Length: 122
Length: 122
DNA sequence: TAAACATATGAACGATTGTTCATATGAAAT
DNA sequence: ATTTCATATGAACAATCGTTCATATGTTTA
Image (cartoon, rainbow over all chains, first blue to last red; front, side, top):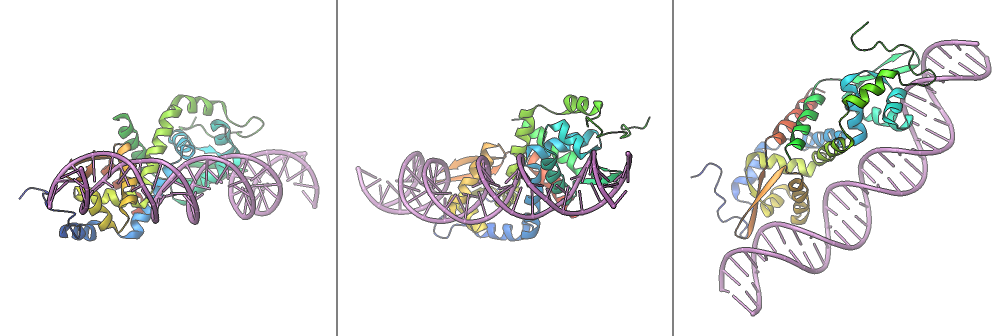
């Protein structure tokens, strides 16, 4: 046979050739992981948060500076930082009255870099 | 000085220390690219589409098989495949009455793999 | 202690999104 | 040609999301 299951008489009466269900059951991660994955990517799916992350690629900033630099409300930025922090993409540190935000780890860089590559190739 | 601009008297009167604006202007990609990036990640931000992609990691499938395997409406799956195709994450091929979908390139794998890593570490 | 400043947060509103339902397109078989 | 099967698509509705506004929390300075 071929490498990947020649699609023979699929979609007849019962649809779903036998193997597909087996594949799905064996290789699909559990629902909760799929859900968490989607939740994670949802966070990258907003241009305000993307802009925040790009700034944090370069410097550690406080909230009001971020707001001013991105020309947005302090409240809007604060709401987004909360979301970024909840998913551990960003961490914070207090210094006097200000709170400084920075990247939590390096997956963010990789993920966004791959995204950029995909875009540039299309 | 330190490596990264010691945050001195920021947020006084004018907020935004001088360099930040320079950094933002010089290192932030253009608005359109940021927007496209967010649009791309938005696509990964739905668990139905994630599940579809995981299936396509393993096999090439037609729409009705996908629908049956994921236990969803043919229409719902078709709408999502359209979105995945528009952003070139997925490609399709006709064979008789059926249309078979498969992954368009390998960035998808990398991006999702990085997402998984991030989740498993938190 | 009071005033000023930086940030966080809850409620509300408009905008966007995913699914469903009904139906249209397009290919194969009778 | 007509029916059947596989897929695509438009409209509609509920749910989710991002921003704004008003206000609360918490820190510093006077």
